[in-house]
Every structure is written in structure tokens, then in C-alpha cells.
Length: 105
Length: 166
Image (tube, rainbow over all chains, first blue to last red; front, side, top):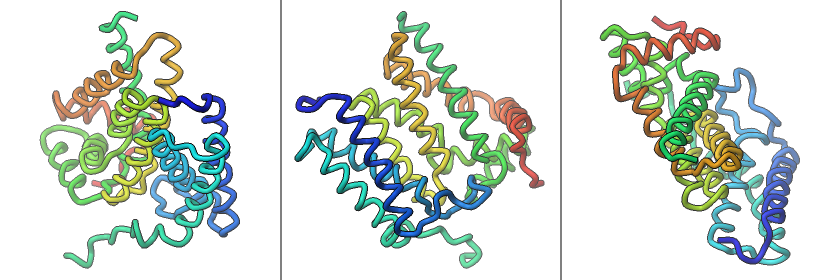
């Protein structure tokens, strides 16, 4: 499946994507964790779901055997930065919070 | 590893994984959508437990750790550990489309990916977890709702996630 680069490189790239996406989200002034109780919170934060987006999209590219320059490192950095930007500016437009249902009743 | 023993052990591991994560993230506490509320009360009327009923209604109405566990197993089977990461991402999108904050499903998919990776050193294969998860979900949703909801209610009580609703 992955022919050009080693497993260590892949894991390192995922780690870089996770850390960098959290840093970008924090720089864009998203909170680090959602407010408590976390399990019912709809707040987007740096820890969740920003890294899920970055590693998920990165995994899609790597699975298609598309690594680009420097053994996939540049791709990891670009996707991490774009995930942070998406989370800050586009997320609410793409995934709006559901209404509570009162308007429909 | 013998396939039958592997499937039995994988179904036990998957069962514990998804029930503990779903309970911890508050599925028995409150119904996320109206459908889950109706399922919960319907199971209670048939002699079940309301907390367990909300749990069953919630996993029916959105992809929580049950679906996360199953899809991550399938992802790892098809694409290796990267398939598990793609599954977590897809489950998160599915969660948001189903009016769910998405913690249980995403974290369930990621823990399953980690568990399958660790168990692969013991001779488990991802397909054992796919079958195991189908068996695990059948024991909860497919055999007897009143008994399974009572068991889920008991686990919710132990983890301090019991519903306060009537």
C-alpha cells in the first residue's frame, strides 16, 4: 500500500499534523478544550475536533498513495494549517449546530 | 490464533470498548434527539430500564462508539491503521449530521484502531473485530431489549451516568 516511505515517517507526519493543527487552532484563539460538561458541549476547540480533521484528511491522501514532497511532510503541514483555518472560519457554515426543535413544534 | 477463539475474544473486547465509551460520554443520561426519547420510553414501557433505553435509542439514532468500533474495524481491514483514522473522520461527519456532538463515535473509532493495532501482535486480525462487533451489537440491540437495557442501566449506574429524567 505504502511503497515509497517508511512507517516511521508516516507516524511522524501524523504526529506533526496533530500538533501543528492544535497550535494553529490555538493561534486563531479557539479554546483548548470545550467547556464542561464536555460530553454535552457543542463548542469547537483545538483538541477536538481539529486534529481529527487533519489526520483524517491526511490519511485519505496517504491511502491514495499521494505523498508529495519530503516524504509527505509538506502535505501534513499544509493539511494541518488548513484544518485549523477551516475550524475557525468555515466549520459553523458547513456543520451548523442543530436547532433544539422548538421552532418546529 | 484459532479463528473461533479470536472472534469470541474480539467480540468481548469490542463489547467492553463500545459500552464503556458510550456510557462514559453520557448516552444513558439524555436522549440526543426525539427518536431516542421515543425508543427509551418504549423500552421502559415493555419492562426495560430508561437509562438503558436512552442508550439504545441514542446508538440507534446516531453513529456512536458502536458504529465507530464497527467502521474502524472495517477501515483497518481494508486500508491498515490509516483506514481507522479515515473511519474516525467519517464517523465525526456522520455524528454532526445526526445532531450529535461526536465525542463518543470519534473516540470509539480511535480506541478501536489502537486496540486492533495492539492485538495484532497477539495474532488477532481486523476481520475478527468486524465479526466480533456485529456479535456485540446483536447482544445489545437484537436479542431482548428489556434485559439488555437493564444491564446497560446497571453499567450506567456504576459509572454515575444514570438519567435523571422520568
